[in-house]
Length: 135
Figure 1 (cartoon, rainbow, N blue to C red):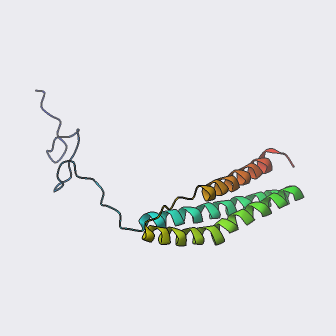
Figure 2 (figure 1 turned 90 degrees about the horizontal axis):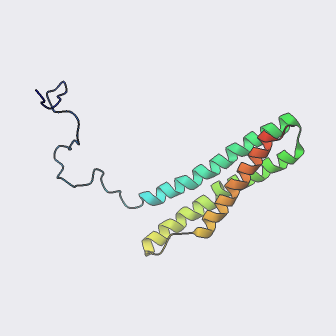
Figure 3 (figure 1 turned 45 degrees about the vertical axis):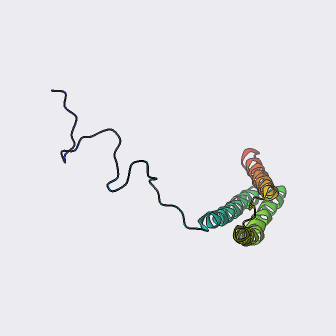
């Protein structure tokens, strides 16, 4: 009559499952080794720079195909922003993160984040213009 459901192995199905050998309330993941957050941050700066370069390439392709010199300038500016992030900001930021972490200082850089955000927004606006305005 109303017994618990069982799966193919005869175990009760449904409900919360426990990992074997893990005490109740213990975290499911292992703690990260030191420096992993800095590596992730560095990779995110690189990914942003590569994304800006890719969008700049698409804008340039659209500009050449539609014979629109103003968009070529926008693509060039987007490419310069992407190259600056990829070639200058990302390595400098990574070195600063490593140095500040070792010293125990704050690693936040709100001005740099605002500048990168402005670059991404300007590139997105250039891409929107390239796509939405017929040429």
